[in-house]
Length: 141
Length: 331
Image (cartoon, rainbow over all chains, first blue to last red; front, side, top):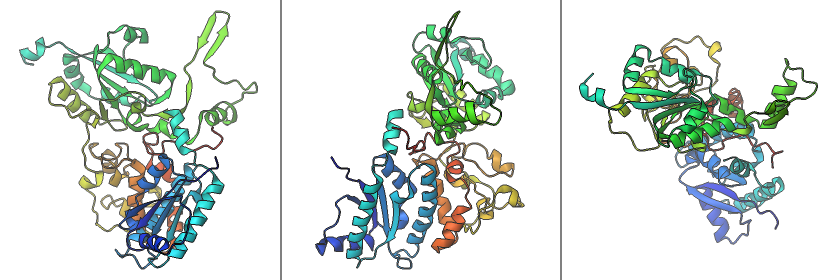
């Protein structure tokens, strides 16, 4: 069977989730590989969530928040941005390719952009193949 | 000593080291004259650093014969694993003693590599090695006198609870001796013990909650610095001076030995129970402090943290969520 990526996406309640919703209500078809978790703010995405996603078998993680300056809580998305860059550096040390984690800004009106992002990210992960970190750890415990 | 305690059968205590430096055993010796209190109520039945008791003697013991075993060190090879399983079987209470048994500790940093890479470095490419025949350790080797054997070197390092069930964890590198005495005396006096799986000899609070250094709520860091690049004033929070300190994501209980010695916390006591991953909590905390909203500047500031994995998981890589580096050549 062809490889179908499992992608965990964390979408903020105020912009990105609403944007994804808009893609749905506008009947825009997009890749069904995303397992979406709605959170109140991209500032709520702890590095732990991303690590746990990989540990439990995700092949990619997508983080989305409001555009800079638009955060419902003023600066949650900036916190997310800082954490994202530090987390990326750690993940690369752990042998996880940087393309597997992505941070993008999606506003409530960007349904089309969200659908395009979902397709494009799914394709990127499909090219990379399965993330093997889960398998490596299982054989050793 | 009361008559009651005198007539009580003595507790049987065992101390074993897996992949360890020996510091944990020394921390037990650091009870100094209190050692007399310990031996008054306990018989040491097995302690390789101090007593000549053989593995065969432990194997001959009945199951549950030992009351308390302090296992320090990580599980690096099949000998460590065998002893962990054996001591689990022979002990009523098994305590993971010290950072290595708790979360993997310094030996756990080997999880950035696998067995193949480690052997290549140690037996072939290290500067002081001449090994033209490419000799490597093997688990069994036939000589005229018979077969020699060595333990098998595992592909990765494990914390004790990744091999056997652990009753309690006593963290620290090494654990503060006073904490050990407190825990030991609690066991001796039959004080009510916390539920199995608890971390003992440490608090639930983070180091920062009790740290005496001056700090503000809103920390802002423009530049991360190494300790040698700063003239520490001895009283301002290390983080506020741009020095990475593991205080926000580390349990207290150690008595702030490092911070009182003007050195930032390195995180040997592990994370409070509320954080499932020691380093992730720290990454979360420290990234928030970065004083910039500009992606390019953020990247530049993050670049100043030379080795996030080694810094934030210095004592805890095997016990973290990812546990080890993904090496793609592995199947």
